[in-house]
Image (cartoon, rainbow, N blue to C red; front, side, top):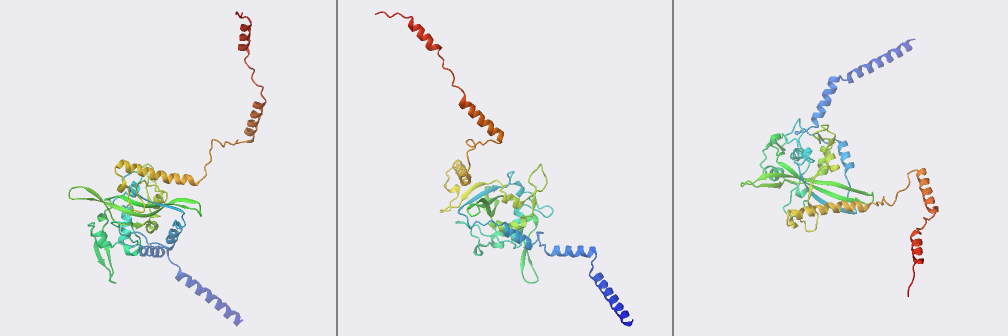
Length: 353
């Protein structure tokens, strides 16, 4: 009897201990929400852009288009006028609203915070995307373009730049260079276009009032894509629903731009060898036609006028019956009235010698 009592006491004490532990581990809803909010704040940097998660990095790698196996490749440079209707969703709002700005303000904040590298725009030759050509933010971007900034020093000795949103020249960047790769992958039978890099063009005015465009820097689109793949934008004045993202705009080629250069051995732009604006426009149309013609030549396109199969069995049977009737139909009688009249008239003539 004593042993049974001891066993009951032990079991009851164990149950009580587990209940107490469960109560101490349980959190109230307020504490849970507070901890989640605190974790979100630790992953948010100065610009308000969230840091990349492992899932975002993985998705970026999966969405990367591999052009290393392309059997045909052509590099195209386009200039996007951001004031055009098709490109306006990438330009507005020029002043950030609720922490969301246009394409340039997003790229600029990522570059200033050191999240993505930006590369020099070469005076001559093509752009190079390696560590030796990474642009120094202070001497290559902020000071030359007179962008106001403040240098802040952390307790660990590192420094960073803080820039007010009103000082970001997003309104003055009214055009972009877009570097595209038109390619055909024979292994996967894919003909597609990949956006390689972006270059913002800043509108500047000389002392005489002449407007000039300055290429600020180059940035790889794959570095920017994880941050803009979730940035939804309004693409229409009629439908205000934000159904597309900035990444959709580039991946689906919803923008509109004129060809200004193709990669060539002499590294010449279209303007360099086009004597007049009309000649440059003809050259642009010729290159666009070559891209379309190459895609059409890849696929077999049968002539629909020669191949017109019957849609149903009844139609096929009717077509065969009509053909047989046409073959068995008697020939039309010849018109003999003319010959008869001619013979009769000839018999009534008198030949005189």
